[in-house]
Image (tube, rainbow, N blue to C red):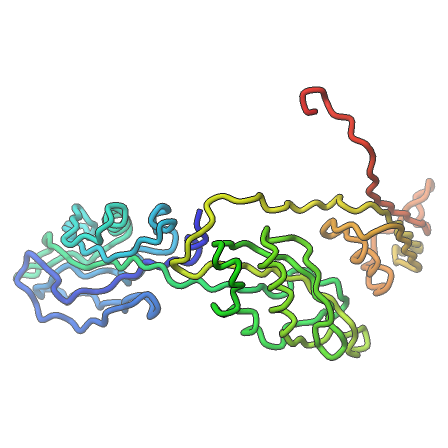
Length: 359
């Protein structure tokens, strides 16, 4: 599914030629709404005993939203304006919907009536005597896919404690169209590069390494070149002094609107938390009150990127010594006692023994 499904906007643009079965009242002043201005302003309810057409309860701008854009239309980047007219019953709900001017795309027109029928609620029309009656209401939906820019996320996961580096200017994380690698643009390549940055004590990027490839060498290389320009607030140690730090980021590469996509290509490498072998041992001594009195950490081999059990995180249990008290251990007589806890974890590699059908 196209990434546009997360950001495509379906906006309501109000027409001034609203139809009604009752004689038309002086039209209220309305402001056409584009996809960037937000929903239509709320209209006031009709005055009791005064002839009026159906009036929407709430903003028509909420009748169609991001998730309503037809999937195939998004993929094919089809846009248009669907004009519609609905019949509103005495209960204020839509009883019928018709397209008065097509967007040129059947699925957009069908989505228009489906969403308006499901979501629109009205103050029903009133006749000259102020009696509730049925009426009609006309409007339109503009189906428009906005330009989607490539962007980088802020730090996903920090390996710097207790105060990791932070981007000094998050506007730098937006990727301008001219920064899209020409080779990837010509080949219709997009994807997500995941990388770590080494930040010195002045907030300057000193190193970059790709941890998960986007599947495109050009995009991965550009991710490091692009992020080298970023400025950071440096990491700080427990005393608040600037120090070396490391951050991890996603850079989501999205082709500019209208650029042909690659329909088939090599599968993106998957994340492997067991790729590197190694082990660590965390030894903690707790006193009779359950307070950690001493701590030691020992590591062999490579770091194992295993989420919250990442050795670099576990090591901070000892370096920070901020572990909360635990419930004391109890001896055989029911009395609190001091106890040593040893926590070990490791990853080893060996030849696989596979079932015959999996070979």
